[in-house]
Image (cartoon, rainbow, N blue to C red; front, side):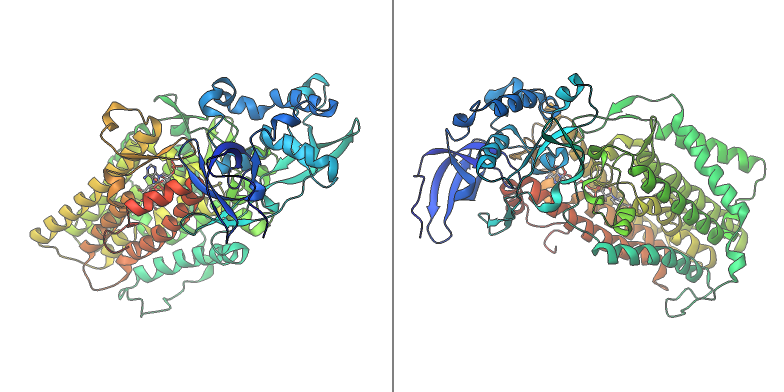
Length: 611
Ligand code: NDP
């Protein structure tokens, strides 16, 4: 058994898990059986590190400037975008340089930090396979060369150690994390033209899962609409009668859908509403977003009112719901193809970490580009909130009129009024709090591909309106006490949902906001803190809990005769449980020990005392 090299209490340089960064840490112990050093970072994070990830304090300093090659590299480093992207690190060294940089930040930049470069250069002298990448952007500008980065190969190993709670930590860059796309030789050096952050973890069952989901989603929408239209809307009444294929397609429906999309795009472009910054991207930039969704909602409302005044029959929606859905599917497919093709032209640092696996099927599904924009028109931001959400409201309204027509009512049923009102409130809330979407997973993490496009343009408007569609053909008479109980349930759900989302959004935007001073927080090594009281101290995803309570309240007005109106709450529970697991996994990687502490303090994920 090798002897222990470092003693307890000694200050050393410790590698930050999953990155190539080294920070000053103090050795707090050594486990002989696992041969791991327990170390404490300056921000309080405690980790177990392998000996190879621990270096003497002066390890890097002694290598500095030891050769002309190194001198030239230090120069290029000091000018590299990696440094300008993290200005605080160079300007306020005392605090910031010692703070471990977030693993994903490093992966996205694909640029090794300064200290790693020193280490690797030293290794390089003895091992020709050892490599690293140095961003040499300004040098390249001086030399009038385009987009070239100096590259030195490096050997990549994967080593897993265990953190204090027995959870796996990856201390090495995995092979997929960085991949040289194009190399050329220049002045005796290897240059890299483009480097992409390759997806490390596959979600949704990888390429096979993605393939089947892409086929199953449209089939599910069509089947649900057909089943819901049946007189006996029972899932046992399966398969529903499939109409003749030619009746499924309608160019008029496609025209209406495209016009709707363009109308929404026009409203999006209106120069009204404030402009806000998005969260910082991996490349340090912040995108600008115009906040005018609620104006769009009001203008849409005015347009629909004008249409009704001019006796436009909204029952068209009910009669052609399937054709409209199929048009939306075709449109989504074309848009997804466009997004996939254009993603090959964008710089590597604009790709989503999750959608760059190299598999066409998977990347097409997940989405390669994080924030595709045509000039200032942000396609993801637009699709998330406008055509689908507002489309859902209009479909619901059309179904309300269809109910009155088909059931010979002068006024819609109480059940229909509740469903329409609850869902209208949900959409209005999303549009009113438009800014809050900028801190959600969809915007911050996921690329824009078939998954989000289909979800936004097809799934949301055509399956979230199932309750209203069900009520068109199936009467559900509610008594007022029952209705009031359902309203109370929806109100509780809404208060939790809105309270949690607003609290997190406000905290992420300004953690020092005096209004949030009462919240208890846990600091993390990334510099961000986690809220551990208030809504986020109740369960770990209070916003999901509120959303699910509301989902139940939307289904209850339909009674208990059939399960189809409950499709939404069942599907949504599965979606949010899966989403919670995805988020949890990312947060654990991002925040490490701090996340584990949070989980210890807030034990339940979504449902208190249950899950
Ligand atoms: P969240 O808004 O819940 O964001 C999750 C992120 O919040 C985490 O990655 C983390 O990011 C941050 N976070 C987690 N815990 C804490 C904490 N304790 N303190 C501070 N920050 C924390 O994710 P979603 O995008 O999934 O959901 C947003 C809303 O949209 C939810 O209300 C959800 O129900 C709803 N939704 C609705 C859907 C629908 O179809 N109707 C579909 C999907 C979502 P970081 O630390 O990096 O900031």
